[in-house]
Length: 139
DNA sequence: GCCAACGTTGGC
DNA sequence: GCCAACGTTGGC
Image (cartoon, rainbow, N blue to C red; front, side):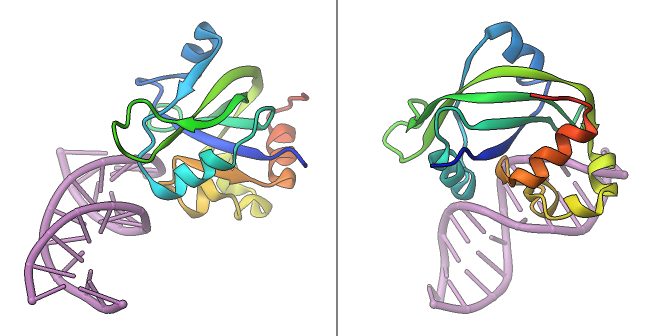
């Protein structure tokens, strides 16, 4: 069983990377999109998650870790949605902006770029490694 | 089951 | 603030 990599998006004015740092852990809930939900359900404890700021920032700013795999989203009464728990793992030394990502030919495959509205998407090991390189950051 | 209308997201 | 993209809903 290999570890998977993901990317989640958040508007920093709603819940920022700094908020996650401050909280130490959070429930990633309220997702109401089927594709994103299925990605949440595929998350396992220990998976690594790139944290992207949409709107203000438009950059990957940190690496989070799944600390609890998918469970029923308590904010969805009577409906079938899922949540996971995330904890901050590492700041990116150089946040990687959308502009930089778009300029990288070998990152054109990223779900973030191909499906810009998907709030929870997969990241391949190669993409993940390249983002870390661009961020001048090591795990 | 198709497709038009609608709502939301998110970059610009 | 605008608008394109696209996911979802609902009428047929």
